[in-house]
Image (tube, rainbow, N blue to C red; front, side):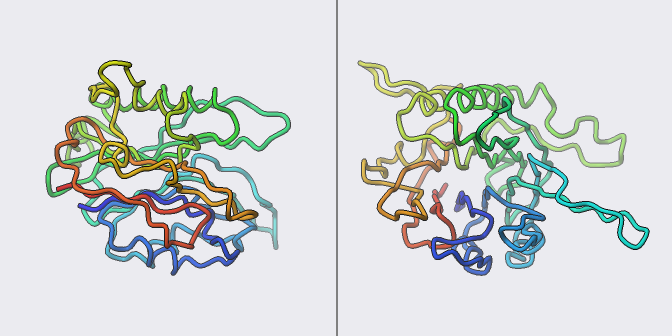
Length: 286
């Protein structure tokens, strides 16, 4: 199975063009796709419904979308009718296999006074994968404050680890005449974490490096697939500054739970992609 995460920056590429067809072509070969910065009603991309457009351009994939942020964007009474206009900003998961359940995990945040601070979230999807049910999370963390990112990471990891106790999106589904979704232990955590490798927030996800034993694979800490396979170097990057293409950082990650580590086959960054200011980060499971 091939997995990819891609922050698609409202559909706008490094060349300043809105081109969802280009984005779809860059990721359509993946079996599971995690997208961030998917919008509805955003003036910067002509107020398009990116969810509907991406569904149409990736017809072989099932999808779920949860907006973490939803605010008024000019609702009004027109010709005696209430016309609702919303700005939505969130994450998608797309899968070739059916998505059995999904929910939004809203992440903690604090109000800023002088900088933009959107409500952030993780879209959780339980996928009926060929190797057994699998949880996939499309994540987008705060971009301006390390302390907030660490709080968000800690909260998200608590929710991930308590999944079976929480009951996911639904339990007792039989009362609605629905199939009870599974409660898989294994998970994939993908997205734009707005952190650099080995930063305090990175260590909050993956665990710190012990001076003698190094970084351990632990039940509470998922593995960074690129680092685990030795595929990331100090020169690696996943984000390019649209205003200065020489300014690059590594901000996007794929993590897997310890039960999937033995199935890792390959991982890479598509440095040829131009559909966003971020680059797609890929990995493959056997």
